[in-house]
Length: 392
Image 1: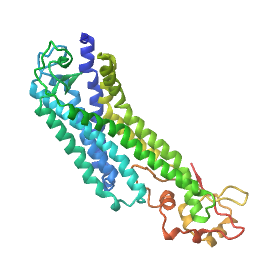
Image 2 (image 1 turned 60 degrees about the horizontal axis):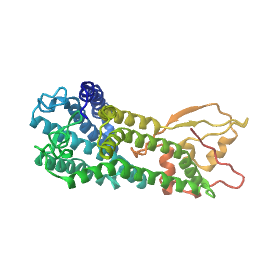
Image 3 (image 1 turned 90 degrees about the vertical axis):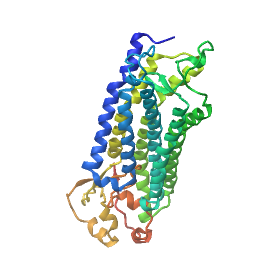
Image 4 (image 1 turned 180 degrees about the vertical axis):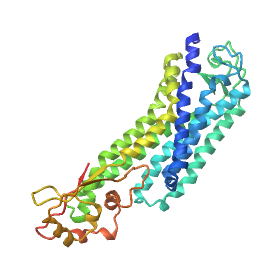
């Protein structure tokens, strides 16, 4: 059943304001990284985010004018005022950049895993940057070029996508298809690639990160000295890591799942729920804004507050700073009996996707197994109590 006039208007124009919001959101992230926080680009994580937002910027722009790219006179398409060439161009850019953005977003989990595995020493894993850029741009461009050559970018949904023309001709033997050759293998590759990038690769990598840290955290029993402090810090990291992983995955899925549900329903029943398709197109057009919110929210979630302040002889709990950890046992003994009232709050960053804790952060000290912080150096003598840390 063809869409009503109201449904045609919804398909054509409902996603436009969301695409505009995404356009400005991606623009701000680019401005933020290039102009305001350029030093962040020394880290692989932020360079990947920057490249992804350039792709999102163009994708949002194309989404905003997609209904006008449909060839003029195409039935059931409000706003159609383009040509076959504009339709092909819009479909090419949209499909290619959809795969590019998914590749970059999935690669963030890979570099997070590599960063934690190599104790945040980027020189050991920064080699993945150029392969990521190559895969993100070259493979989608090659697949989209095949679709162009076979004339398979045609009016579909609210704009132009992979489909044959006229619309629905492949399902109706009485209507011959004028454009679009059979490219089932390419469609299978594109379909499996999108499922892999959304539902297989990122969840597998971030689950491996979580399980790896969780496994190490269990070693806290029986640990002594500095090793015990490191293990306790890992335990405190679990909650922050779980929150970051949840935000990363569910926001990623949220932009794609509505479209997938609409597509699966159409394959199974042969019908289209136009209201669901309109909603799916709006959410997909909003992904630039969603990705920007994820980027800035991850920075906040990755900045746990560490209460630091010495205790008094009245029995208050003594909390340590990084410098307390690095001080000698004798210095800590001298402080135990003193009465001090100095209290302060410091912020340390541990963003699993950034992979770069503050140099003076306790996270770096607890994860990096170096000789400067050995158990022997910080193991208490008999009867001595190590300072307690309080990490919120």
